Length: 209
Image 1: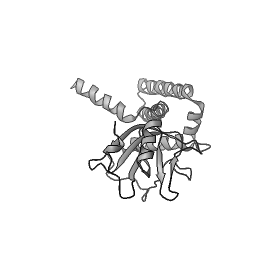
Image 2 (image 1 turned 120 degrees about the vertical axis):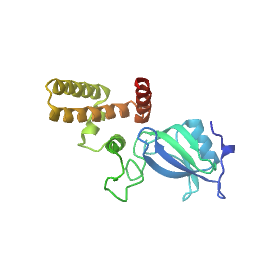
Image 3 (image 1 turned 60 degrees about the horizontal axis):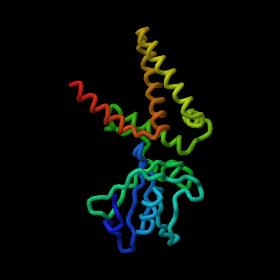
């Protein structure tokens, strides 16, 4: 585990901390820590920062309840910046948004790759879980909980089987897409990063070569 003595603080006694969702890998915010807030973060396993405007420590979620449970902390090669991987209990932004960052360009990246939609969908699901917008289907699933999500996974799996047996490729495409979506919701509900599933998939693939 990293200790405060390993960190290189700037002239103000601070170090930048990039907070990242451990599951979706979305960057949530950029804040600063001093030695005391870093040590409190290690002690409580929740994020603590130093407010440069107020000149005091602050505990993320102390008033809003949107705490960030620390899963891992990474130190860069120059030891003067941190990446804090968290499981957020709500929006990271004080304006109620999942992340403090917004895209300068809403267009999909041309070089995103053929499975870029998976990353995009995973980020949207994480955003829905954090913000819980009223009327959203994903919000409904998270409100209903694990039993409803599992029921939907089972239903979509059955629909995939039926479409396959009927050799209805058009229906199979839609049902397979619905199954993938509900599986991503399930992984998010279980706080299981998709990256870990993909790592297992790589190992399985190597075993079949």
